[in-house]
Length: 378
Ligand SMILES: CSC[C@@H](O)[C@@H](O)C(=O)COP(=O)(O)O
Image (cartoon, rainbow, N blue to C red; front, top):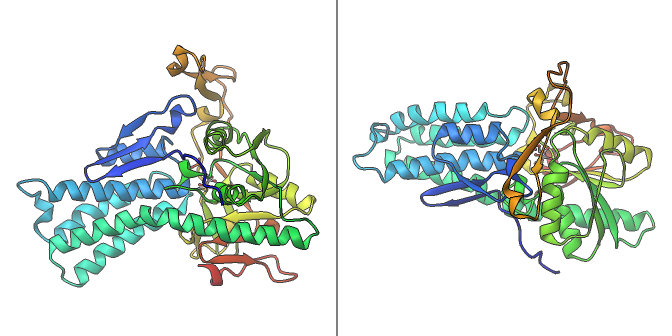
């Protein structure tokens, strides 16, 4: 298995520093921005300087870890470190505020809930405030640290499943062409990626012919971000407009209990095309993306992005020249245009999904059924 050469990192975190790669400036400018306050963390997520369901959960959690580490190192100690109760009183509104940054990607909510639970456990156990703070720091760092390992596991499980499927359909299981939507690689996660992780795995194990990816209008996560990731990883790839089909592997922002899946707008179209052509359509997402409290897709909240984001293209004026740091934001619609509908996600019904892969396994529907039983993979 060959290793991919170099990956882009959506953030850098060390004991006293948290930086994010500003994805608004990609693909032409690599610029890391420091995050030093909860407002900056919230804004980075809301403005999509950092995006992708697992990445925003990691960033929010790591901001909490950074805040607590800095507080522990401050002399005199901040007042909220007087007791575990005052720690909880300080942190709770921060978690709630971060959770409001983006509504559809459930990973953010799951991460904040996990930290709430860690705090509640410390209070219930009457832990001293130092131990409670350290427990919370570890929990927050784990949110991010666990991501890469489970992404690799999903990639292996999903990749092997796919190779087997293609063999059963009479193919050799080699030289697969896999389409992906949006950006699901290291930029969207703590590393390796979900659906792009699966594609990377197929490439590393010699089973991939080409990765196809949609431009992903209107925000162009495909042409700006996935293009850069695939180029960096040296994976043979082809960019297409948002309207063609092949074996598809997509990530998810929220998977409902029955398997209905919210993901980047345009995912549903790809699923319909795949179904029409009897091509496997696979969702690759960690357990933290599965929301068992939501019975089906009709109950998933769908984020609407500012209309202006559907009217602009970001780029550099003259990439490859000295001017390539001159970021351009070009408006391609009439000035003052109103009546713009810009939901960020759509919901693909379980019926159109062939398999859902988490780090715990691969789920398929029972013969004749339209919905998934996800109990074995969450
Ligand atoms: C990491 S993969 C899952 C999803 O988060 C991804 O496919 C996606 O839809 C990202 O949307 P974005 O609006 O760019 O955050």
